[in-house]
Length: 254
Image (cartoon, rainbow, N blue to C red):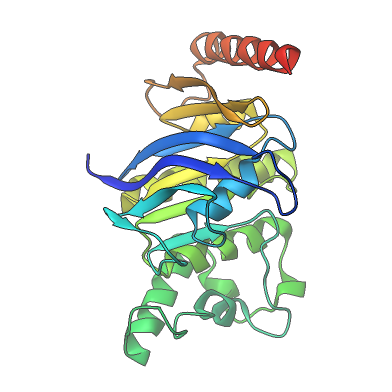
């Protein structure tokens, strides 16, 4: 599989701090691959995601999208946060379309944009709710709308910052399965930041653990198991124990 995104020697600083929050970070993300990033709170997971999205410049190193250095937000890199960030005065359909005609986005006719938005809404199962406003949506529907907004951009890279963290357990499971289907259908390269080891193991082809100060990759695991994985309790349990053991060792050292 060809690489959609690569980070080389990435380092990140918080403003006003001498020590980097993240150092010596290298990652290749292939098309159709899901990589989950785990780590304790405050280790720099969200900062890493913002740098990979081109929202903040790295202190050192570089990010490449399709082999080209990233110097600003890229039209084929979409990011979803834990808060769906839907504009309350717009309908679901208008929220999904929001930004498609901004500078930097690929130029498309109005009909092309409308078709892309309709297809994205259908992909997350919200066609019947396209005229509703955010106040009329459940938490799960709002998260689906946020995913549809990403899909409407036909991204090559999808970055997700704990997108299901605020959902109840049942809805969270539904959204995890939906994300898995969407990634498999589109071939997008996806990087998922999560604090949930079980979520990482259910969705990811690889799991990366960040730890230390400054944070570095403390462990990496390939999850070479068929999907769906919900019933593979023994195999997932063994990986979970190994990840937890590495996490605890990392925390004791720092």
